Length: 204
Ligand code: CDP
Image (tube, rainbow, N blue to C red; front, side, top):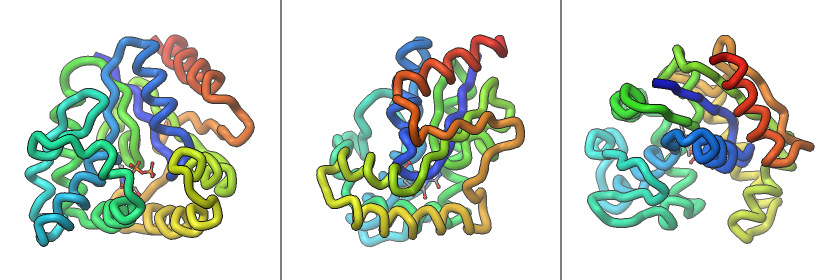
């Protein structure tokens, strides 16, 4: 049973790195951000608060995100959902429900889990904790390329979410004790993936 925790701010490349590391190691990939996004989408659609819908969110490991059996993989990437997820993530009741579901999953099997609080709160005993960073402008460029939108708008929205993640009272974004910090600004994706895989091999 092995857990690799990969945390960091928006657009830093967590999902790409975590997916590739999981593939390389034959581990299962957990995108915890997609859970906060699903909470925001479900709350908006049903006219309920994020805390009311949070206990209903269940994760099925795999590349697609399902909400009550409906494929919401694309819908949860909408900028309005990003903003909703960021707000919902500041609610301690929502965080408690998400962390409980994440711990339930991570208890069995080998995982690469990514998010904001995997190394600090969800899995502080992870075999490897990585915290990815990159310049804000570079992160906004990456996200803008991914979404096919204007980098200036992305940078502004990203700054608001970064600030909310770092300053919230519950589980603020910060490197976990013992986390290896990797600045990815000028590093290619395959190089970051190689580094993470090597770090885990060194520890086992
Ligand atoms: O990749 P990006 O930062 O755009 O989004 P994400 O990782 O899908 O996470 C969406 C939002 O959920 C973030 O803005 C965080 O506020 C929140 N989140 C969190 O608080 N804790 C996590 N473990 C994962 C996401």
